[in-house]
Length: 456
View (cartoon, rainbow, N blue to C red):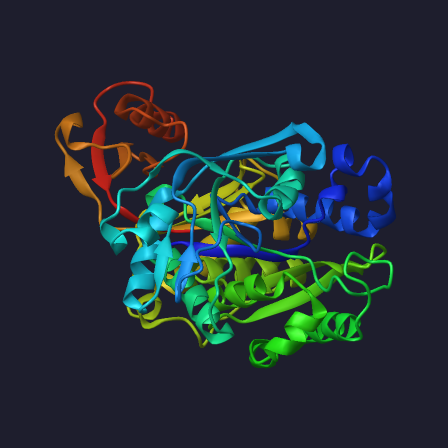
């Protein structure tokens, strides 16, 4: 199961790139500062896949069709803006693209690359040949992000020639594809709705002045900040045309992908010195999509921030209240381990209580690390492993570092290592680390294996 870890509305003026602006970018310093801040936030969120919804990507003009680039490699440069040396190349997340296409078909919509949309639906060959071309609506935000973080796959989705409600419904297809994403592929997503606001803010702007311009920008940001998505969706089409904006449909699609989530939006910056509105908006998920991770995070916030041990919340699902199991809570900061404590067998009456207990231990009682500070909380990536019952192993042939965790024991000494850990590629490495943790330095130890359900 995937999860959306961050969502943003970002502008895409090419002159924001110093090699293009050649000094003019200093006039939008507020925008640049916030673009850099957002890039650092995305680095700390460490997404596996970044989705960019761009109004300047290739568009299929068919009814109920949304273009998604299906090339395996996506690349572009700023040659059209006199800066050919500035180039970007990304790997497409084709597994996720396939998931969106499948969900769109279920909803009576069509999606995919030009080859697919011009052919006979989902039977078209994918991925498409060659390299997919990135547009400036995609490249400008990525230019800033790439300076901080590059370990991601990319999915580029175009706006569509559909009614706003249909665009929102397509966003819900994105959400369902994320929820159905295989955890083995990562599963942490950031969504960027790329778009400038009105292009008619001043007489000397690219399209002159229209009263609808500043009126639209004000109304748009009020709807986003206030969470009034229905009013945003119901904006009159003529009003949109008069304002000459390009960020509206991408934003509607993004909120469709957040449908059902409790979110809070904050405008980090807004300015329009060139007659075009540039806004940087952060949308935070108040309720993370995975209940196990949510409970661990809320526990850390209460314990580290207020010194309190929280009670099991009313929203906890039945599966966390009706079962017992060993649980490990792991914390990472900027990709590095920051704490990991767990129980091999259940010590509490419910999984929920086990999570609370071990989340507190992982942030405050791991002897390898100092206690987690309050200012670190927003930078932590949390995973919760729920352990199945361990079973004896008579041969290492019964082990698999990706599927099974391992327990070694001899006398009172016992060591455990979780499955599918980065940097642990062989059974010998897995057993060796577990032995080291147990303090066992000779033979004659017993082996057990177990499976986990990992929540991230």
